[in-house]
Length: 298
Ligand code: NAD
Image (cartoon, rainbow, N blue to C red; front, side):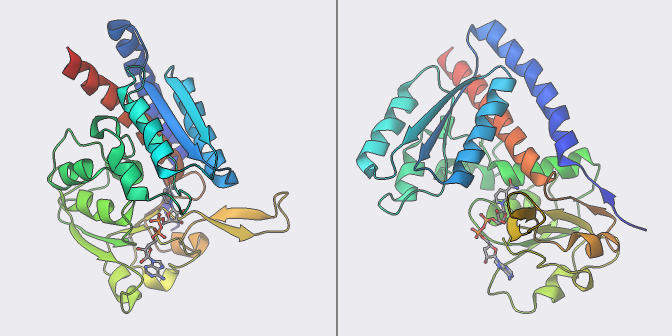
């Protein structure tokens, strides 16, 4: 029987409705809305589209949104100046610097300059450390947070089960492994994290009760690489050429959806799976940051 499909689009809609209430309450008690600043350097069309979606989501929830668009040639010091300004701005509770950054700018210097309390992407080393030790005050990275939320809300048990993560990036794979290994809902799993140098990837993926794939490689995971009944979460977003589409391409995940669906018990689609959950978690982190900054000032 074909796997059940978890719709990230629908789940994200429910989360947004919950957040909308939280935003209203915050506005009522504090007198101003949670504020999210997005910083975009250069004019990469994909980055522009991501920033637009984030801004739209924030405005839709009644948050204050500020979009800062900077020239591709900006220096590191100039960009740091913008970050300092946002760190000090009481209307801004969340700062997001859209990646990638141009080569003259050292990504880590910028990410470390964002005040950890406003680091809604969860990339600052302080938040990475807090998340790794299970501190609930951590602002955790939105994509793995969205995956955990999907598992928990779908009633999928992680406790004691074998979760295999494909990919070890700082923004998805590594924090994903850390969250699954942590204690509590969405955690307590036995975790294997694989990557490009892993030998015989299929021997690992076949062991998975829960398989989370974030490699950036279309159709990397095929039906023969999974065991019957596996839960598959596809984080990958890849553009593949498709002349039947107006844009000349379509988006696809890292999992060969049609064939893996016949073996799995649960699977997420691309698009409409982890993507909308990531944005919902960014909104959730912004509200969380606003509440804790407000508590700290009281
Ligand atoms: P990345 O390129 O930084 O990391 C990819 C990881 O996959 C690396 O650790 C690499 O070792 C591993 N990998 C690559 N090919 C592999 C292979 N053949 N076998 C085993 N491991 C392999 O990418 P990322 O930023 O982690 O993103 C991964 C994918 O997830 C991309 O498609 C990206 O677009 C997507 N993504 C989606 C969202 C979302 O919101 N849906 C958010 C972030 C990233």
